[in-house]
Image (cartoon, rainbow, N blue to C red; front, side):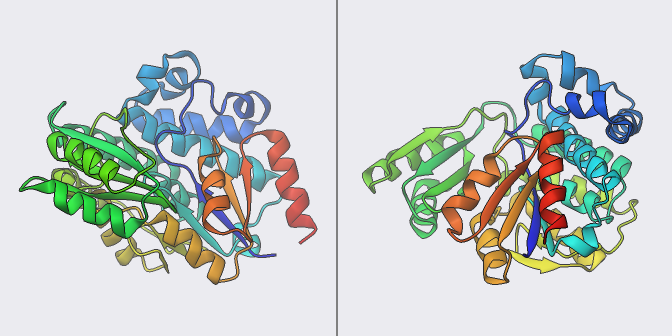
Length: 315
């Protein structure tokens, strides 16, 4: 059995996530305390007692999702998980790439939290509210979605932001251009084309100021080589060099999240099981659509961690 660990991105957040692990395991509590200290904020209170609206704010959701993923990792490690010995690759969807890198030892948990706070704030501030949008184009393949975005641009920004799974592509850019893309996609046979309830147009050229902010932030952060390779969002291929990881994380802010290709590459490389570490089952659902022979497993709860360790023990 060859296993990859994947880490969820924004949209998987929900109030209460991670609390069961924190209540039951000191290793998980330590992660949430470390993130709170790194941010100078009681983020865990927002996660467990706040409103969904507050948690969904980009600057909160990004470090919060990372915290849950790393708390899950630490509990599994206390049960005997050895990432290097058990896992072939790590990958994360958008912000999940930072979770993957923290899990693989490239970033400390505190640095990952601080970088994600900077990233979330910079992405939110890059475009005035109401000027950008994102839309899901369902039922079109990636090449057709790229063509739709190009036709819709008309001098504005409109580009493919997320290639999530076959027939599931998200476009991002100026609001008018994205609205044009929706109408063009419907005329090209899209099953559905809908605006997404997001606060900014992520993963497009409008995020250039946020990319600059991340390049500046990375300059003062230590990056170690990951203990297992990262399959990078913008490459859909594995990397391990710390300098290249920095460069690709900057590119990722404005570039396409090539998730469909990432899972397909891992399947071709022999990975037969993708374990989604953290909260939710979004990535697990995508696996089933991308690679029919790859099993997906969501690892969210203590019972899930038990099942993971049993599976690793029998591998």
